[in-house]
Amino acid sequence: FGNGGATWVPQDVEKDTIALIQYTSGSTGVPKGCVLTHGNYVSNLEVMRWALNPPDDAPVLNSPISGVSWLPQYHDMGFVGGILGTIYGGRTTVLMSPSAFLMRPIRWLQAISRFGATITAAPSFAYEACVKRTTAEQRAALDLSSLSIAVIGAEPISAETLQSFAEAFAPAGFRPEAFIPAYGLAEATLGVTGMSESPVPVVRHIDRTALSEERVVEVAADTAGAVPLVACGAKAESQQVLIVDPETRLPCCADEVGEIWASGPSIAQGYWGRPEETERTFGATLADTGEGPFLRTGDLGFVCAGELFVTGRWNDLITIRDIKYYPNDIEDTVGGSDPALMPGRTAVFTVKPNPRADEQLVIVQEVNRASLNSDLSGAVEAIRAAVLATHNVSAHDVLLVEPMQVPTTTSGKIQRSACR
Image 1 (spheres, one colour):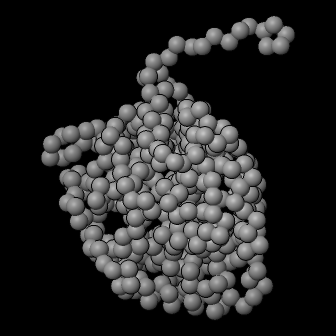
Image 2 (cartoon, rainbow, N blue to C red; image 1 turned 45 degrees about the horizontal axis):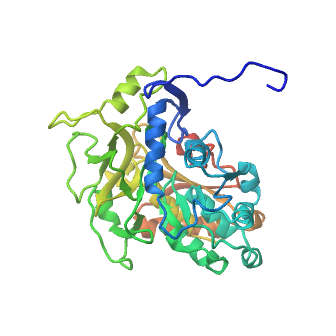
Image 3 (spheres, rainbow, N blue to C red; image 1 turned 90 degrees about the vertical axis):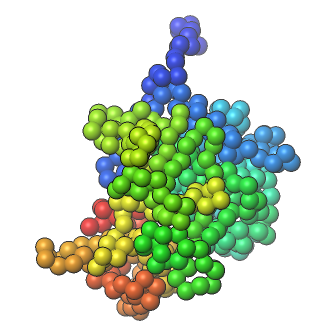
């Protein structure tokens, strides 16, 4: 351009013009390319602007530096939320390398503190890493009082993580009201739900046995077998979210767990070069009314008081002796069973020792570096005891591995199938 090159001419595009192909993370299989149009992106950016609408006194749009993001820019949360959201909202965002965060999570919070950022976003594991891998002295040097919006999503959201992060960084000025749990996926451009009328994240405790039977039975937090689930907010007006029985394709009752179906202008056009999967995933219709098409997300959940609660992935469900288990529920139990283990770095799946045998539970768990040279037999026994006591199932095998050995996607999601 400086040497008299041709002047750039804006291109005329329609809302149905393909903008790009955005790939899924591949947590449950081979990554698939979602065909997204300009209309899909504009619609979803409007959804996010609605979901992240701050209170009148929040300085989100008035700060010189309004965002900090370390998320990979080839991932939907990093690209749509971190890059396009910044441009669309007329904000300024400081971008960090994902490896810089992974090496030292404190760098993310130091950037927020240094630049007075008001908005950030990350998966649950990132907030957990900030709690586990920072010292009281490091936290005391931070000022997170400017942070008005801390989006948390892209993977199952831990209620314990929300509480531990809020408590650990309260002295640095972090307010739990900043948390915005959200739900989305690449097939919906990014966001599906996210805004809540509650000033703090909503946590409901559901009976574990009822969940295994696809029922929603709320219990007190101190009840044995209570599973804490975090609300992922409500849908935007332009979106439709239904809970549907994945086998009968009939809408579920309010007290039933089903597959999350979504429709609206943010839904992708399909998978690039995969016509059969496109029809199966993006062309769903209700069996009773024929209403559709809907996106079948493959995620399970329920809606309570207008907010979405995600319980797990349909394809990830473990069935042992005709009883269904959510692997993420067992993984949470394993990660917290012994101090030598790294929470959030667990993979649970089943194998058949032989064709006639029942499915058997296998656990792969990372050990923290400080414990690598220790006798870990006690940790293995702690895992077995915790899983048996909490879930009433015995582990066929427990494998402890070094840090960073459990396979994950580029966005940090555990790849259970890759562990088999």
